[in-house]
Amino acid sequence: MAHYSVIDRSFVEEQRRTAVSRRADVIVAGGGPAGLTAAIAAARAGADVILVEQSSFLGGVATGAMMAALVGSHWAAGIGLELIDAMAGRGGAPKWDGTPGRTATTPFDPEVFKDAALEMAQQAGVRLCFYTYACAPIVIDGAVKGLLTEGKSGREAMLADVVVDCTGDADLAAQAGAPVTKGRESDHKMRPFALLFRLGGLDVERIEQYVQENPSELQPQYRTGTKLSVGDEHVISRISGFYNLVEEAKRRGELSSECHYFRLENLWVERGTAICNTTRIYNVDGTNPDDLTQGELEGRRQTGNLVKFARRSIPGCENAFVIDTAPRMGVRETRRIIGRYVLTDEDAYGDAQFPDAIMRIESNLVQRPVPKELDVHMPEPIEGSPQDLLERDPDRVPRERHSYDIPYRCLLPQGVDGLLVAGRTISVSHRIDGTTRNMLVCMRVGQAAGAGAALASQKGLSPADVDSGSLQDVLRQQKAWPEKGRR
Ligand SMILES: Cc1cc2nc3c(=O)[nH]c(=O)nc-3n(C[C@H](O)[C@H](O)[C@H](O)COP(=O)(O)OP(=O)(O)OC[C@H]3O[C@@H](n4cnc5c(N)ncnc54)[C@H](O)[C@@H]3O)c2cc1C
Image 1 (cartoon, rainbow, N blue to C red):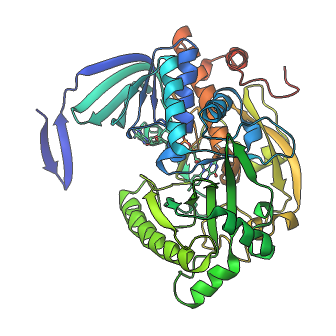
Image 2: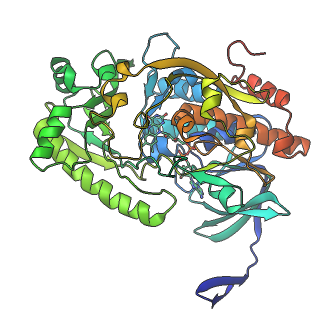
Image 3: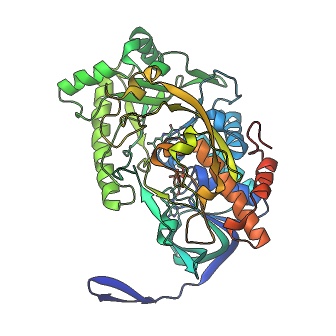
């Protein structure tokens, strides 16, 4: 029985004993793209691993927010690439064969992602704890030694040599006292939320026909040629734009002034389904439950309006209906740790190499000086508007090809031992986060975090003292290293 008191308007837990329910070499908190790969990588490297996930499935944003498209397929390696292959084998995604010029986005069926990821985790021997919320790190003498969790049976204490924070919000790092930041450096504003929903009853061939007959209505890169084969079926990654139809609907008062385009993703031609990624909720913080609650209400309001719009205005959507809304709000950006190294814009433009590299990113960066409005999902409500060249006319944006390393130190929080961080919360600038937040990068980073955690546990080291050559060797064994041209 816990004892409480209220002192100076604060609720004080005076003393509480929580039995240690489980021990492992490595505990991973969060089973999104980063966490599931971290857990699988650590288990394959020989560690006894517990994966704590608040939901009932793996995938994080990929499944829980229905964001079913892996951007940057050329970044796939190791576990991420295996996952694409496993989904392709189950008829849930096109196979990524690395063909130059092929569309670099891999759409997938989120239910197939859940099954494939679960099977890989189980085969690796990961101990799964679903329906379990990691509510606090156990910190002893400046080192994280495990987690306190809450679930239906109450509070549990779980101990481990190393904890990997893959919560997508750096929940544990922040609670352990590691320095963190949020959003854009200049004002800490964050990218908007999105509540995704799945539409059925679509005539995708007619939507495509509209696209071909009205090319100026659509984002150029999605006008033609994105239909991919999956067994006997076909899937289109994305059709985005419908600019004039949206403007007409705004003039009729059917859509809000902040809506500038309509975006369908994951269009399964024969199934007649697609995921709509068009709701946008601005000026919110995904670490604040009040903002998340308001976001859900606003997301559902926008969903209703968008469905009416699609049925009335878009050829092929006349019979559209909502199959389901995503179980969770899509939160693009919250905390990032200020780690032992912060990867900067200068590093990216300078093609930085680091001895403790865990992956090398190849990317087409916007030429400098980069105008403020050329940001992916920027915090201001201009996304998809004529101001937003990245959406409207990306070919007019001058770009340069660059490659840069992500060093292992970006996964290491400052001032706290025993903890690694992976996923969208690693230590990078807001602009670099525009790339590192992509799921295939999160999976590469997750794999490195898992391998690093396993090595630290096996050798009795702090994660910070893991030798980068040994880490790269494990990643090489796991087919996630080296990048081209590296040792
Ligand atoms: C709307 C939207 C569109 C996007 N579009 C794309 C795209 O097209 N392509 C692309 O590659 N990327 C896209 N992204 C980015 C990408 O999906 C995320 O950056 C990526 O999923 C981050 O992975 P993660 O593992 O760090 O975190 P998440 O995917 O957020 O996973 C975190 C996991 O941790 C769990 N969790 C959180 N806190 C706790 C806790 N305290 N205890 C237990 N469990 C916890 C969550 O339930 C979740 O499963 C998009 C993101 C959003 C939101």
